[in-house]
Image (cartoon, rainbow over all chains, first blue to last red; front, side, top):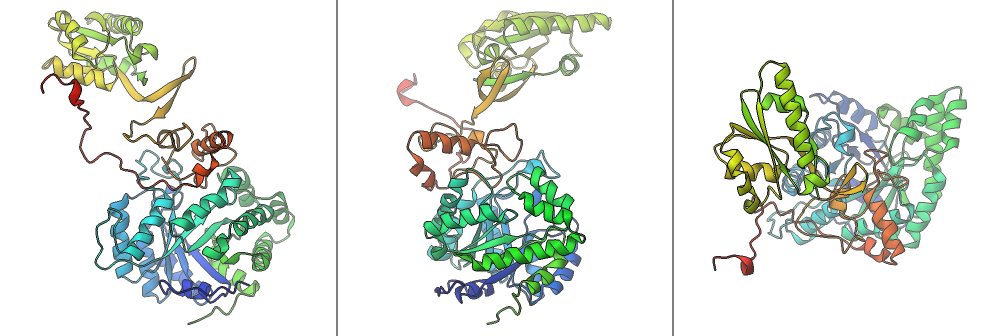
Length: 312
Length: 222
């Protein structure tokens, strides 16, 4: 367990859980490709009391979806805590800061800063990718807004948004040795917490965490491990070969393939990975992202022994 | 060099359909080097247009001329004898040459015979790759001589995104990850500390409209 006590900067529920030294558990909902809150309302109720905050992806895989911003606001209205994801692909620094002002004024307190999948993957491959800032620069912009009260241009922001700033890191990207250094750049820029790419190869994640701990990153930011219940062996194989930046271990695929009940095995694998992460030095919690299988999150969390969630 | 690709003869024939006498204008600069707009290609296109129109029973007279550089007024004047005599011009120069030719020879209509692609290097026979985006603020000193603006699919400045794997870009496995190349180069140079340096948000130099460079010491009017 992580016993760190840290000064509260923002006061979001997620920050309080992490600062209290308890093992955090966050969920994720992918907004739909049409104009409706139905899936958010449904999954929010499933996750209520089971996770500390819920991420909303920002046009993930470069497909147009209901905005992360609007989805986060909906969750607030339902009395739960969102984590607003923002990618660099779709907005320049003006649009980003403008959205942050609005998001904060509405009560959104957690932000996850990402580069974003390339537009070539999505349903508008001919669009112009913005990438005015990269994710490290985005983090730094948010930190200056919060701590120095100024916009990226240096001008004063009268009521500055004060976000609990998150970033991602992919232990499965290359060059592998650079990944902890890249994470350190993000922490130096102002990241308070980290959600890693989903772990489907525990050995590589362990090596990554060792390097992070060597650099002392776990003492400077809360590193949470990405957990993904993968509901079918076919999907696991697809991710093994077809998704850039992912590594899926052969053992992971085979366990799903050999299982009589693949879905039950998927839950079991997630539970084992979560419990393993709880024992690992430097891991402050887990982020459970059940892509297109959000309804399984409560069951994973419960079986992993993460309930009840702390309240403040 | 500026790398261009020829437009299809079909597209060009549509552009020149209303005319009976045209000039195909080439350039001995970059477009000659990338085998798309020099004297030889001017001849080829002119013949294609003549033959196609002959076949349609609607013959056209096509003049041919190539000058040193179409991006330079000094050489553009060399077109004047032929330009005076035609209804339209098809330029095989890059987008710069095409525009400047149109400006100098207004009101003669000038049509593009190529699609200007990028600033690139000639990697092999018939192979060119984008190496520079003319961003106006070179960072090659920080990146081991490999440009992340032009060669990273997302123009990232602080290292590879999560989609970089085994040296390849997430966009396509045939594309090298520029940041992986940078990492390897800096490692070989013993300069890996540069990978840890924060590179701040870039001024994309788009705040002055079309960019203009005036070298005071070289201007004729002081």
